[in-house]
Length: 224
Ligand code: SAM
Image 1: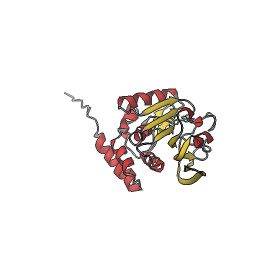
Image 2: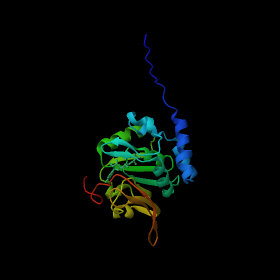
Image 3: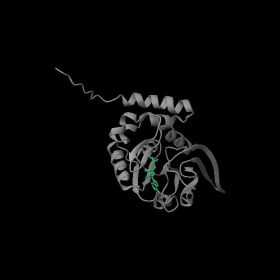
């Protein structure tokens, strides 16, 4: 008789998550203890389509459908650290995608507003966030290059798609002392830009190179 063997046990996601934080974040200089703790807890595999869950804790971005991706864990850790999120903060994310970055932010901030232009992704992310109990995140469908003026100002704004320039509306929706992190540059190669709003203007610094899917919209790139 030929026995067929089917292993239906799930991988130990929690062990994979701890290893991800140690090997991909701590070893590369992510030091913010709250960011590290959030990424030890948020179940990244739940934001990844089932067929790719086996790779959820690998050192790379993954496809989530509609030509979009969930960012590499290191990039999520780095951008979140650059945002310097405080427990009382209200944070705006442009580019909800899977909802994973929003969940990490929700673990650190008071309230998170996140905007996604692909309606199917916005709905799926909202469902995942609801199932996991993140009740301080609000998901909006639309063109995030306009920001979300009705809920402004924000203490932090994070753009998780590559922009030709930082949209002016986003800068204007920052509170005084607020931080904005955005990948800026040509399609296929950007640099992280961090802007801080001071009483007398904006202070800008450039971070590492990165590659994001394009920010598409009125103050971003045209449709692909
Ligand atoms: N933060 C996401 C996550 O945790 O899964 C990953 C974001 S993915 C790299 C970039 C996302 O930005 C895509 O889902 C894309 O549809 C979205 N996007 C692109 N242009 C946008 C725009 N103008 N407004 C809102 N979302 C946009």
